[in-house]
Amino acid sequence: MANEAQSKRWNDEHWAASWHKRERLTEAVSPYLLQIAGARPGRRVCDIGCGGGALTLALAQVVAPDGQAVGIDISAPLLQLARHRAEQAGATNARFVQVDVQTTPLGEEPFDLAVSQFGVMFFDEPLAAFGAVRRLLGAGGRFVFACWQGVERNPWHVGTALRPLLPPPPVPGPGKSPAGPFVLGDDEYVRDLLGAAGFGSVEGTPHETTVRAPADAVVDRSLLPFMGVSPEDEDEALGVVERHLARFAVGPDAYDFPLAFMVYEAAST
Image (tube, rainbow, N blue to C red; front, side, top):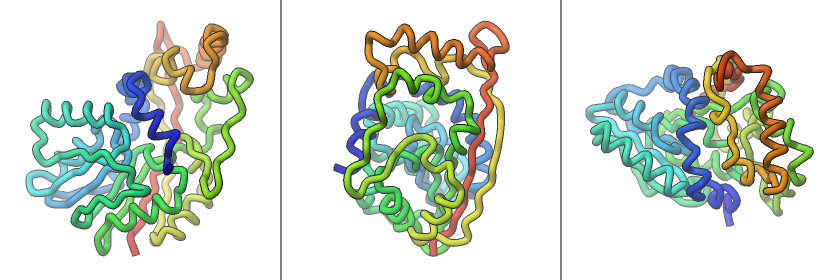
């Protein structure tokens, strides 16, 4: 099954319930992505791995009144949140579809622009997935996405500190690739991947910013089991997290997290 582990994780109600906390980090990246995307009124735009739909709704506002923004994700609970937000915002030109882009054609008219904000790192067959994104685009269509730079450039991430308490990462099955937040941290790999998927005119721009947020924007107890921490090790893991994040503390439950990410743009050929 394609993206089986990711589908299970993102459709878990407990995992999805923490989404609004994680958005404290990702929403700081949206202005960079939107600027490079350059969406315009009347355009058809899709947002791949749209999560709770915040970026989709921002795009819907830009392409209104005659354009349309379609958010795509594998997570039913996050799409429920996205649809609720769209209703609250009165965004009638935004809609959301639950589908795995890697394997399932949308059956839509071609899009002018595809975007993704930290959504394209979770495909277990990235070449197939990027090829599927290209097929969503019409002639001259563009693909713009944000991904994290390497983990060494993002010291806020607690995975390295927790490694002694985590099981070894699973070995990908035949024909599969590792998936996770930092798998696109190598610029040469990303460029090769985009070229092999049929994209041209690839440009990548590195960015750094700092986000002030509470500790649970990075991790809290509810996420530890998903990371692989056993129940008997959770208290120890929380101590590790607290010590790891202490270097970023600027006040009571306030931390300045340094984020390093890339924004790539490519053209459909």
